Amino acid sequence: MSLGLALGAALAGPAHAGIYSDDLAKCLVASTSDADRSLLVRWIFSTSALHPDVASISAVTPAQREGTNKSTGQLIERLLTDTCRKPTREALKYEGPAAIQTSFQVLGQVAMRSLMENPAVAQGFQGMGRYIDENKIRELAK
Image 1 (cartoon, one colour):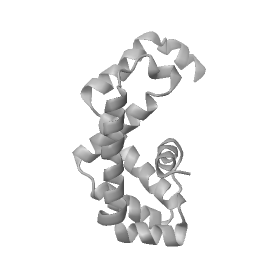
Image 2: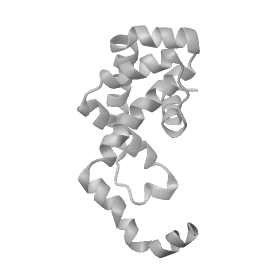
Image 3: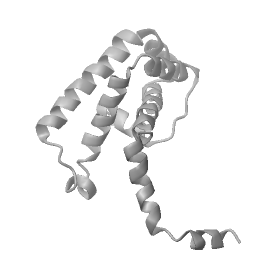
């Protein structure tokens, strides 16, 4: 499995961290700036926009996607081989390649949290609530 595919899978699935992947996750989160996390969100979005169900409502160009792929690849390489080298080596040694997936899932969750906390995004999510009959939902609790 390629590293990009593994990272994509990590962002989609549940995390099951051991102590070494937990240490790596802590290093990844501590070693990324707001700009780095924003880059990860853009990468997740531009890659997700390839799905046929959303491709028609996305305006990500191939050049933008390639630029995001390049920048994100450089970020991941720096984090794994330089900034978080020791925790990466230990996680791989004691927990195997899945440790990288697990650690990046935590980083992805942190990055996505900043996206979801943006006031415009939060307001956008609330817009759906106008189309839900809350009385019908309350009836389920009776």
